[in-house]
Image 1 (tube, rainbow, N blue to C red):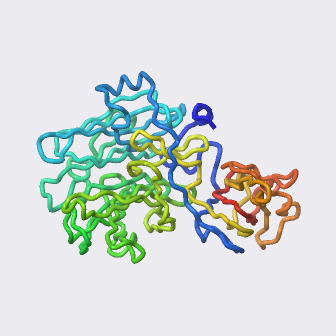
Image 2 (image 1 turned 180 degrees about the vertical axis):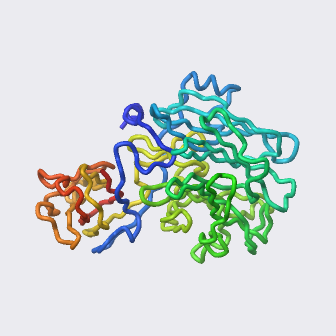
Image 3 (image 1 turned 120 degrees about the horizontal axis):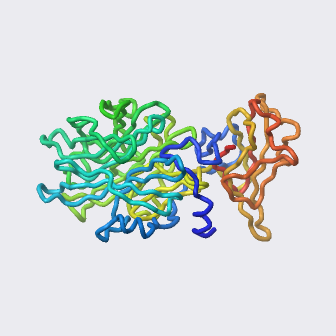
Length: 458
């Protein structure tokens, strides 16, 4: 599909952390062993790296608004907010050395308007820093129900031994802002990623902190400390607490399956169907730059049922793909795509295709019980066509009742999918689509070969 055609198809509303994309409401995602009930055969659990889908394309009017010849790729995207009429406002920050203290900055927050995640039609400054020794780590969070936008950013603290200082600003419209407090919200080290968690009614940040550790190579924080993560939450953005259930001593730390020099630099969490996903930024000091900040290693997809306790099932996958920087925003959802802005690029994946359950040879699995909706079921799956002797891929789907008995008329041989690759494949059993069973508790039994299944929705 050409980019122009995709842009035409994708002019749909987006949300900063949606439960569903427009036209698709997820019922199940298939990513981990616990998502496969009564499996048979050998199943494969795979994740995908982000793909470069295009570049941010400002209109001439937006380029004129940027000013001073600064390309949009020079701005650091922070987050997005849906617009009632469709599309998103995307917030980004730019920094310039302040010249008063080493490594302190002046910053400006800009707001762009995008109808599709690729094109920018407006670009304007909406906030700039008050007096202070500011740093560069920032984020945007959006309370959709209250229609409040929050900007959080860091400065140096007058007492460096206490760490850096987090500050917050709030706005009802993205144009007029007020400080949340005259004092720092909390003190810590400045790398973080965060979101507004509408499910629990609180802000949630994956916040870098440090622990005593004798690491192999010294960097800018020495050899006796390493970066690990903590989870902090707040209901109002002002009063924060560390969640001690996140891990030992309230910290998320590398384990025995990690190299000895791994550190956790930041993690950007977001909603993903019935769970949370995170893009974690991994780091290690380098002996080639002793006593200096080392290069970053890679990013990983993390997953969680509650946003507090995190698992790392796909350690071999570089989640950032070819992106030159880590994800620092929650995704934008347009049409059939999940999108991020990174360094002027549009990075993303088809909707709900971060990870899958698949099989090379013949295998089976069932879903957990769900209530059959009144709309046609849509399957996100890939069973690509082969050639000649190797045209073998299929997904077949059967409906079963609460007692795990096949429902007559919904046998798997009446719903066989071949040569398909789409995020919204309508499921039909000859002339039936399952809506006749609306309201009943059912489960799906999948039969597959050389195929991957990602999600089920309607």
